[in-house]
Image (tube, rainbow, N blue to C red; front, side):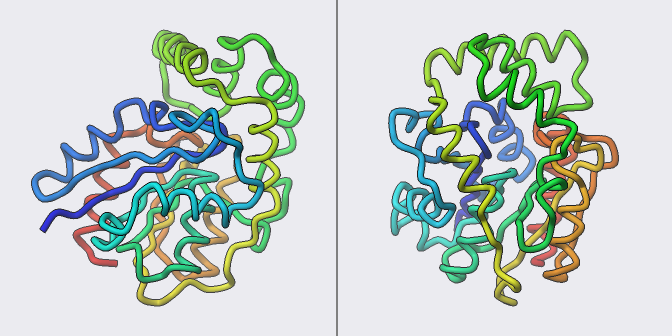
Length: 256
């Protein structure tokens, strides 16, 4: 029987921003595993849609896209940042649909203050260079500089160029960006997760966008394992794809 893995990105990001991690994960997992990507409304293939203003509505949209056939196989979810919040709500409301969830550099208002969920020193640049900027390549470079630690300058410049092309083909509107931010800001995770749900909390110890304390708080509150890359940033799959793929494989093999 094939195990399906679903990859879900975060705020104003789409499946192309995995930058080939879906293929890398499939290669590491090997035979018997299938890796698929999903876009939230307002992003990627669904950029023309209106983004929901609640995480619950994002869950509903992802479930509808996957359909009963995929959900009946109890796929494993790998979700980054806002995607992780979608995973938390999914586990709370539909605990029998997922075979497990790996929540990467995510957070919730229940366990972490706002200044940790979006570190204060980033506010001016996020507003100036990301949310309000009309310079697409400058915006993508700013996002990468805020979310990665381990890319060489040449690699960062090349990824920024590629992401500029993505933004030109499938732009995320300012209105949708703000709707997604509003949903993330208000999200409240469950106090506890179902005991039957395997959950791995994954963190880049060098995350400069979201404090690593947020992942630590999730791990403590839910008594779930925490896997930390000591130097990687918020975009862990871009900073340390091989490490992340191995951690996910080991987690699946452990059954926890």
